Amino acid sequence: MVKFKTIESSRLILRAFKDDDLDRFVQYRSNPNVARYQSWENFTKEQGVTFIQEMTQASFDTPGGYYQIALELRESNELIGDCVVHTLENDSRQAEIGFTLDPRFQGEGYAYEAMNRLFNHLFHDYNKHRITAITDVKNEPSINLLERLGMRREGHFIQNIWFKEEWGSEYLYAILKEEWNK
Image (tube, rainbow, N blue to C red; front, top):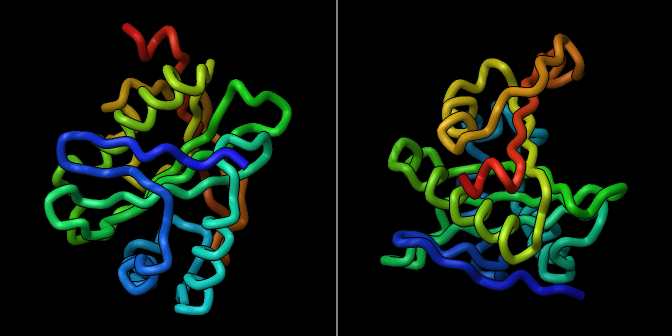
């Protein structure tokens, strides 16, 4: 089992989830605005318990696996969000990322700071060749963040997903290690 190695930025600590994250985790995940573009709705404490148990047993960078990383403020040790790394099953040199941030901390550059640090970690410590992200075409803050990170829009999928009782459209973003290094 590969444990996630804690990484830090100027304002954040990216680390493995722990049991005492439960209340804060459920608090922001149960917010309807947070869930709007996510796969869950009405996130419960029971779901949070299960999730954290699964993450404490999960291995980082396992082909086909998903690993959720806690985002903590360095100054206060407060959980403010999380991000996911999905190492592709058929090519472990590629990873897909995603992120969720408590609305109280959105618009402060935390997601950019976390993703910037995570990209460096994946490209340099794990020698990833390519990182991708998929976002709803209506999720402008996510689109802006991905483009700010230097990711390019590679695809526009039109009504490709049945999502929350309607057809949704998505953008695919990607960046190569050689592009990130520039």
